[in-house]
Image (cartoon, rainbow, N blue to C red; front, side, top):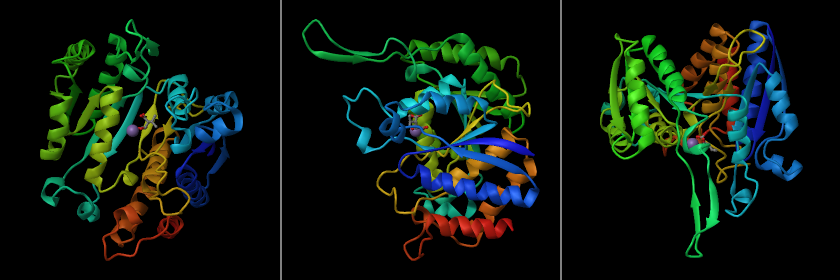
Length: 364
Ligand code: IPM
Ligand code: MN
């Protein structure tokens, strides 16, 4: 296969982990006889520095023609001024919206060898295997109006709008039930229906969609309770579906079940198809730009590399190749190789490139 993959390294540790993904894809290409045409483009803070905007038109145009997109991270202290007119995050949010990537899949599968790296007791983590499905192009992230203004008292005030339409809720709910049908047949929907009108519509709509899936169990949880249940009974969850903001928050919490944010992959998918008739997805680790360790070559590449496996599976239909990567990650962890974020005190951690080399050895 010949596939066009757009690389968006972005900021902080983004370039370090995207380089890791690139090396792994080169190895996969060599081993399985594929050619991945990989070209890097600007997004985020570095794009602001070079072009004045976080999502240059050229980047967007290239992404629309790609078979899949790999993104590192955006943002950092350099661009954090609350008064700034342009922000790195606009690049990522713009890309999700422009490409119609309404579904963000974030699998949470603690590795048996990493249970010690999680703050949760091992007895809670055994058998945990969930998929958090986050709505990605609606809700308070995009709702209008959003503005800063001076109110009647002459004081500054600011507002955002949390808004969902029925069809936006339906399509993400439907996907949750479809995915659950292939898994353990349970959907947990998370909202704040005791307070928010948008959440009441969410709950009502998810309930209606559930009627088409009588074989799937539906559980509704309020977001505050859900953050607690995630720690007290993580094994009970199969597919969790929730709106944009709650999904952002709860997936960072869930990542600690795996021992580190650095381990968590994600795939963002929509209706647009690529030349292979598969979804043109955006694949990114959930960890963000991690400015505290950027440039030191110590970032954990696993989240990015598992995102790459998701890309092979969802956007290119290369199942064996995806499994080869997942097996290599499994085997590297079983052999005791660790980056700093998941190493125990008495273990000497590997750098990003050492970790990648171990993975490449396993793939050989
Ligand atoms: C994520 C990130 C982004 C988000 C930021 C960088 C805009 O935290 O992908 O989880 O809030 O969606
Ligand atoms: Mn986040």
